[in-house]
Length: 588
Image 1 (cartoon, rainbow, N blue to C red):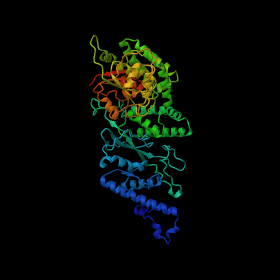
Image 2: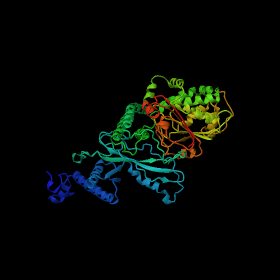
Image 3: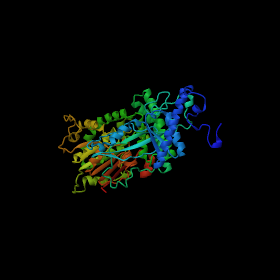
Image 4: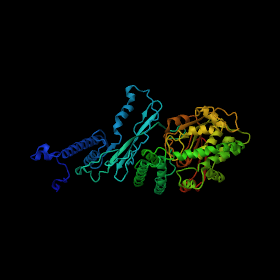
């Protein structure tokens, strides 16, 4: 039965509580659940209509809802969503924040300037699990909150909830939708509509302390991504790579949490959510804004953190660090018996050879099954033959050592963007940092703020440096000067000591948790450290190839990486897998 003559379907509510006045009954004669449902629909539809009319007045397409009436109730959200869709004829959307209960506190925090609190300092405010999983929508950057030292902006990330997606953490008990515990109506009369999966539920995401890297030659022209994912074939290829790597990543993530049943459930939820992201982006690549490979890799790490996998490769990194530190003394002794020119070449070869260790590369994961970390490192070192595919070593050597009797001035301060844990940082970048310190150059090791694959973090580096300093007086003195060693009484086990200068060795975080880095968004700590630097060394595929390969800087820049992906090698350097890049660019 319908009312087609007047353009209404049978399910259309013509009048709320219409039966209560049209039948000879008292209100008490009706079932309480029917009364509740009618109240809920009447109020929710009214809210939807009034909110749409206000949005229409100001030309807005997205309407945000919050409050105890809505919080945690899927049916209320569904009804409001239906009303907004109905009145706007599909042009407007109802949006719901998973943690909207905190908005009042955030508003108070952001209005501190109005209350005479200008001296309030903001330090590294970070939402550890920032993303609704999965989300479908874009990034909307709000106006930055500013004080003397910090800049903070907010990003909204949304999920269009479907029943096929496993719930985000915490795992939803039976009888809930999984939307952060939103209740599912139990009675038959309250069943959600068939299209009720289109609930836009998201999380307010805080981006802490982001500055533009001050050494970019032209920040307005800077584009971090090297690979153009606007090319459909490139997009499909990298989606396939990420999808094929997903089972191994899930195994590592679950193992990092002890392999418990809860970890397995979260691992399955992560795999479903990230796969949903990829499927959505394959359908609409611009759904989250301009898409680059760096964005995809960052999305994967954020999704891991959303499901409470803080550091999926923690135990692997610890094991590889210990194995590499065990052979470091012999490497340093070998380097100290070389001539200056031979040592510089050996150091660059060492960085390139050690960069083979990358759990984000399928080819490298396969190598781990064929030998120990030290065996793989030695194999890689033995295969180092010049000329490399991109080989600017001779130009770099002349800048460092000069030619003939002409000695160039040494760099005053170098920023070393480190990549992987284990041999990469211990046997590659640390010896190179040591050489710069020996020459009187202040060194800043720049590492991730948050874990990403097997990349070393700024939190982990001081312990690695302290352990390495036990075998090297140069590192010990520099670490002391840089404040990395609490206890200066370190036993020097090697016999080589020299009167090295007390230039400091320091560690700063880069402000991100991704294998790549967008230098338009770095930590204020890194931005401050970079202001007087005259040498940048970017190491690894993520930071030197996937991103920043074409970046120009105001100071000297050295980009070092081993290419561990055949397609990237062909596209970027017209070479093959395991080819090496040593790209030196004098200050622009």
